[in-house]
Image 1 (cartoon, rainbow, N blue to C red):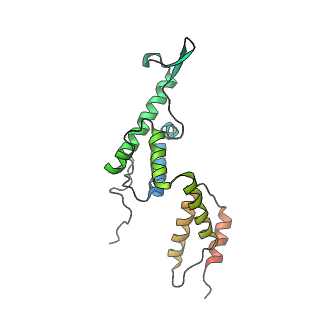
Image 2 (image 1 turned 180 degrees about the vertical axis):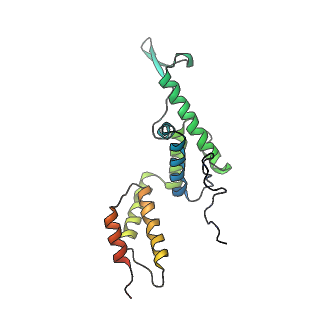
Image 3 (image 1 turned 135 degrees about the horizontal axis):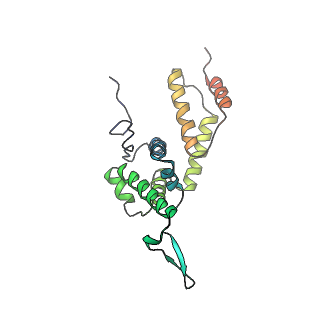
Length: 183
């Protein structure tokens, strides 16, 4: 019986977010985006737009509005941010949870997890350049099966996609064909 080598305690569920234990962040990140969008697209939107408590101008100064003065859109944005933050908290083991427990918005928590596991923009750029070089020099290893080669290639492509680098499908197909060993 084959075992799943991913560090997740459960399988896919439509009711629970995927658990993150600090390993295989790229895989978890994709699953979390899909999970949040499946709850409601506005939940994912809360992840990418920073939430701020609604304010108003009083005597020329900006002050926070009292909850009872919020309009429906302001209430909805606050609810979406709270739901997104709750989903993130529910998806983390204790070590990861304590890393972000002081965060007050979903975006703040998401960005902290991202920087922790993907690095700063400079680190991500260096990783992206390394992966692009791996893509450009990709060849089927001696004795490697086509399935293993395809798995390695997909791994590189998916990591690059996670870092914002996209490839044309036709060019990827040509790259795979050129990477095959001659018999």
